[in-house]
Amino acid sequence: MTGIGVMRWAHDPGPPRFSGMFNLGFHLGRHLGRELLQIVSRAGATLAGALLVIGCTGPSKTANTTPALRVYVLECGNVTINDLSLLTPGEDEGTAKKLTNSCFLIDHPKGKLLWDTGIDDRLGPEPVTVFNGGFDLSVTKPLLPQLEEIGVTPDEVDFLALSHFHDDHSGNANHFGGATLLIQRAEFDAAFGPNPELYGFDAKSYAELSAERARVLEGEHDVFGDGRVRILPAPGHSPGHQVLFIELEQTGPVVLSGDLYHFTGARERRTVPSFNADEAATRASMMAIESFLEARGATLWIQHDFEQISSLRHAPAYYD
Ligand SMILES: [Zn+2]
Image (tube, rainbow, N blue to C red; front, side):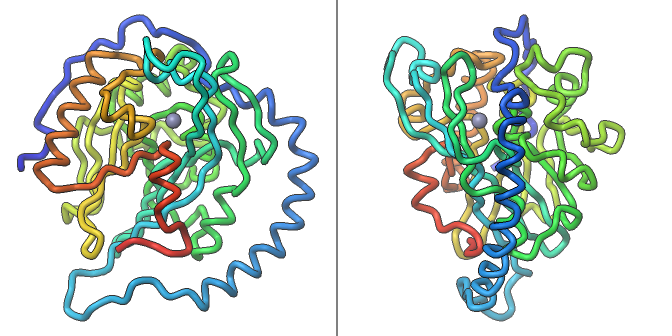
């Protein structure tokens, strides 16, 4: 299968349809006091977690294979959509649906890649309603302690890639300013241009990322040079939205969806959310990625799909 990177979508973002996706910053102040208390209790939880890791056994490795490649599934917040028709225009009006939010740590012999950073840990467990009442968001399991539990500090993350820059994916990005950012050209221009809010991006949520040191991509990118971890362009949800292909030895090939779809039913119906940047580009991306999945026999992990993601084993367990 020829990589889909040879495909080019000449898409014009056109006039952005909304401004301010989730705008979490406003809500964070009232959570900070509670956060201090949580830090204290987390310290105890972290020690317990570390002890658990010592006793944890993942799938056993066989000898004489290629060096281990692991994927850790991380919980990255809770999402309830209060009107599903935002994702399925013309259908499901007034229907609420529980979604989730997930991030992934890809541990390759040549380095560590963090895929998405979730909802800002500081939001805390009490649901906050955003996007004109469209979504309720909360964080019951912060990202950083989950990384700590698998022995990874933010400084040890070599590469950071966000499927896109909406703040349910960029929420904790500021902890990873030392990593090399892997970002598509169109996303870079939107996120680091003069008006990121026009694309629903909250520049504060990624202020610590260096535009100068970013590796700006023009399509497909082989992260570690051996073809096993590849970023694939899938524009439409945002101007430079991307997905991640991972060739796992035991598990088989997997693609992390970003927000190409938000839940399995959306994939089946090929619905395009009303707030996507470009509907035509979204449909082209859906076709391209579906072709890729079929050709590679790959499984799509839909990052916001509550039922599917809940069925996966989470860190400190892993897939290899
Ligand atoms: Zn999202």
